Length: 156
Image (cartoon, rainbow, N blue to C red):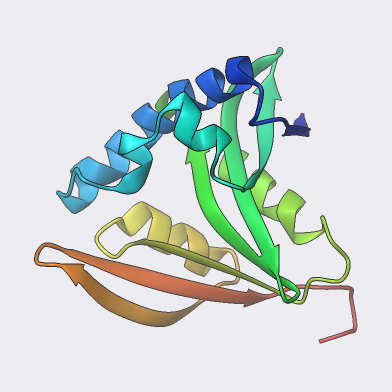
């Protein structure tokens, strides 16, 4: 089940951290860069991030989450995380599909990930995103940005 969660609630923020850290550690290992911002988040920094969070629950346990900001009819995915114990269960795909239909006024989605994070790059490409940019942000790190048109059927 997917539902909106209140990141301002310290208990909820703590549960997000418990999913986010192991999830982003997997990415850090794949891209060989351990200074990615989600690994430095605290309960307090999550509560202040200004993002809307949606959680994927199995038996009332948080297994994955997505956070977004919406601006100018574009959904910007800031975080997409699945606890490693729940990889390969389709949770990330369900979270993205949920977000696509969340706001009928939105026309597109954007997201970025480490260019060396092959599973994430393939995930976005396999789910209708196109690469819009590859940017070097540090000596050992480049980010790939993606874009996807979304909206009501027949209106593009």
